[in-house]
Image 1 (cartoon, rainbow, N blue to C red):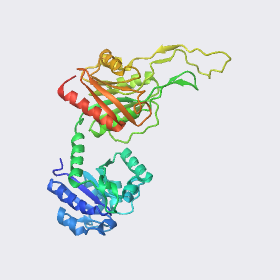
Image 2: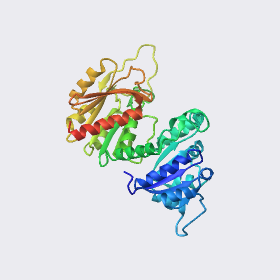
Image 3: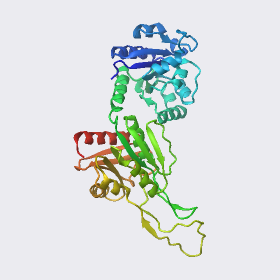
Image 4: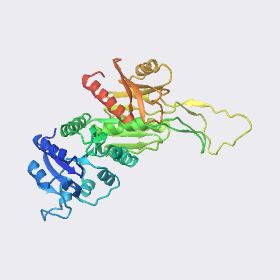
Length: 402
């Protein structure tokens, strides 16, 4: 996977720099073209000459040391790189990147590159657990940076815990696995719906539900990481998308979501309806606010269009996946929905189960395909659940279960 890849290895100041030497060597042995960029702190631990000998390329340490007058070095390297790896990544460099600080050659280059960036942290266990470091890493992960978590064990500072730079071969394996996954949906168009819908009563009030959209947005981000061209039809939520391969369409009502899904349905290869749409809407809506009265208020409701049913009945070659959020006998109702809606697979969860409800960051689901093969995905973050769902979809599509 790394043969002939242009790899920028950013090395920052920590005792784990000695492992970066091994990483540079193993990347070169894999056939990668490696250029090393060191911070001033990194040069206190290892000489640039060491990396030059291991990679047989010049080592960059100074923004103003222009080796070729025809090029601006940090822009040239930023454009050249297919992959950037920061190892070891200190708390300092993680903080700088998350705040857009560019006060040395490495941080300046990282701002300019469009390469995939992998960060392998290494620091004291208490630093790694500090809220500022956690927040910075979360921000970067949301922006599309990839983290290779540190290992646990004896640290140079004398503590035992998480914070040790992962082994070079493990770092390489993680990157190769990611590159492999990035091809799983390459050339595929994936249509995803997410979040709730709102059905207005008057200019002030509406009917909706507790859906946050987190599961659908996680699926969209994961599909884009896997190489898909994603269209995300989102109800009214306070979430953002970061991946450039996600086209977002914002809607509010079930009718608007119906139209948006059909606008993109015919060209889609995979359709995942994760949105929790309103099944009913007020039969009459009011242009003026309904005034409070002494008695009870009765609002007559009518059915909305069944988006998933219509897509299932109208599909040609699409692989369609629905969601079933249940509270009672979820597998029974989910499997019935799978059959009734003409789906290829369904993701079932019990929203009354702790860790699997709306608005939380975790989920517990069971994936069932049309052949009734089922796989339970235990409690995990919605990001992890999303990746596992997509891997199951890819497996089913490859095996022709649709």
